[in-house]
Length: 156
Length: 127
Image 1 (cartoon, rainbow over the protein chains, first blue to last red):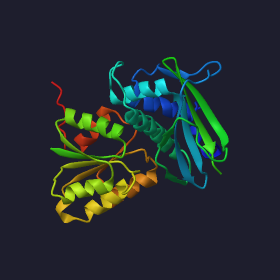
Image 2: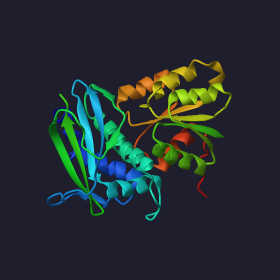
Image 3: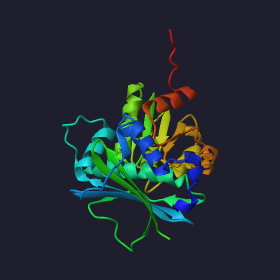
């Protein structure tokens, strides 16, 4: 899938990082400096939480987000405009984190020529089951000290 | 003005509803196109429908086609609000009868500007 993405359109920047920054600045955290590449090794995640959408078509792929549950909770507060101390229901966390994957996946889809349909998002406490796909690209992000990993997988 | 927000994500519905209410709209919500059609068929009238594309049961494009097949709903303004950002998809939606197209992610200002273009929100006049 990545081989089909027009990287030239991003003037040497990482297209996934660019998309993530657009999503964050528009809907989660208006501070453009709040999201940046993670430096160093990614620590072991506490209560890892996964959200993904699959892209059909000639170059099927998966956009997978991984973070800690606490970060997914903070992302949900950001999306919903909740205060830092407001409780977040499980259903809201699942819906909001899935919607972030959906928005990122939809925009990745626009980078792929002749894409197929996008699946509805899935959110789980375990990584997707099934055959191990090929990792095409991974971006490790630092959002206010929290780690968020966005990975593109080939399902071909 | 009354708006119907159609999205299977309750998060996205809350975000869009919040923006629309701040602009003075009364709002209704539906989780998919079928649920939205049921509301319209029950006699509920709306001025605007904000429609996601990818939804279970009935997707947004199918909803647009269904609405445009009913003359009594011809005054409903249809705005897609979706991650489907390829040119071909935009053309399909507009050809099916959608009036405007807003790509996620969006800001509150982007919604207001689209609604101003549609004549549903007044332009701000600077002093």
